[in-house]
Image (tube, rainbow, N blue to C red):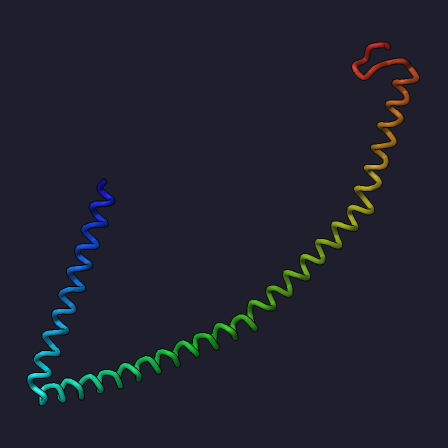
Length: 135
């Protein structure tokens, strides 16, 4: 219930804020229409403010373009070599794993399999089961 009440209060505050803003705009338009000389001054000030805003946005876009350029240069000069060396390391590890698998693990696995088979054959020939009892 508290959440619904809070949302209702926020909607009411938002509606009140919009109503006050519209009333202020209406009053401003009325006073500017009643006094054309002030309207020209306000218009000129708004044009100047708009020009300043355009200049500020242009400068900020220039800074943004410079930052993007620096980011791309950093990626090319630092990150790509790291990725290449990581790829080379991964390929080395892959080759080492294949070598160890072929020359160490596979022979040990074969020998272990042969020994297990010989042990099982010996148990069958002697008549013993795995738990040591005669069958």
